[in-house]
Image 1 (spheres, rainbow, N blue to C red):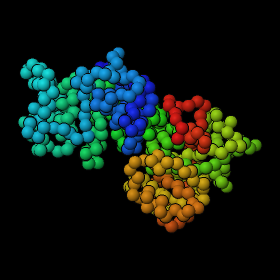
Image 2 (image 1 turned 180 degrees about the horizontal axis):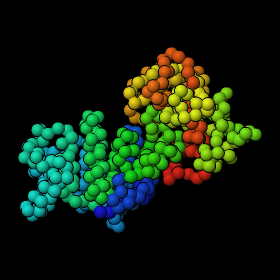
Image 3 (image 1 turned 90 degrees about the vertical axis):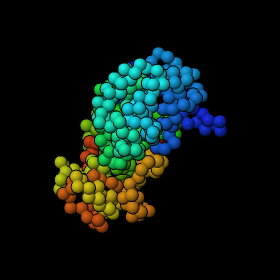
Image 4 (image 1 turned 45 degrees about the vertical axis):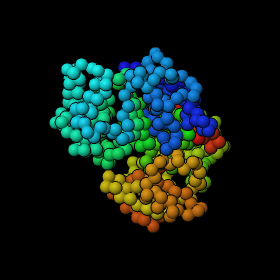
Length: 408
């Protein structure tokens, strides 16, 4: 096994397009790191540079203690799992898994032992004599995984391996990949545009935008302490609500004024963001996660601060209701890609029902809530969970910057 280190890596194409800009990232031995971001952000290019499929323009890439910038792909001791299964249709499952070992002229008995071990781990023992056409999509992906496992590489590279699976199989297979990686302890770099995959699979998640690493952190830290407006808007579904506001210093403490709606900033929030005191009298961007809003009838603090709006769309999902409201708050315009690469149709439909002088607000509330479309309602807000950003730099307001922050 080995660590992987990107040190000031650049990838610039012939037309001066910079696909990756000054990427520095350390992936520890045995760690599972996920690169996530919208299409064209440079995540796959970064993976392909590790694989040796893209030349590095500048910087240094190390696998273990070895600089591999000029090492041929076949000599890097890595195994790659692609979005397409890339199986040989005329070969059996056994032959597909064993293919790479036979090219390396591994002893026949050793080939049979490694394939049998991989098949047992992946639940493929009963399919070894079948051809790929007789397998489901999930089974084919497991065969592709088996072909990587038997090579016993230092590093696994996975490029959107679940994209061709249906929703149910994606859930099942991502759990299998996570379990398998933990059991094998192989350093893994995984690329996806799906933030659910990123948040549920990675030891750490690295968010990229336009070739620049925005933040790298464990999934929960990434969610709780986004480094900037891009990460705040990209991570989370539905996305974080963002509004323009002002921090005011009153006799009762700091208050966030959202344009007539005044929200007290409790000591608990200030303890996590002491730098907020220095923003008194200044404009800020206030972030509210949808799950931090609730129907007052079901809220933990029904008498706490509230936000008011007209319900333009109500999605009953069984376990929760996603309510889309039009409010009089001041919206914040940020790059649309920060809202995610796969916006839900319901969110698009709701946006069309919000007036020009209104700001959309999305809330995840109790399935027993009585909110109805077309009605004006109030939602209780957990002010201890507010997020704050500097509107000029786009950076989160903390006592210090999170792991990696970049201007949004």
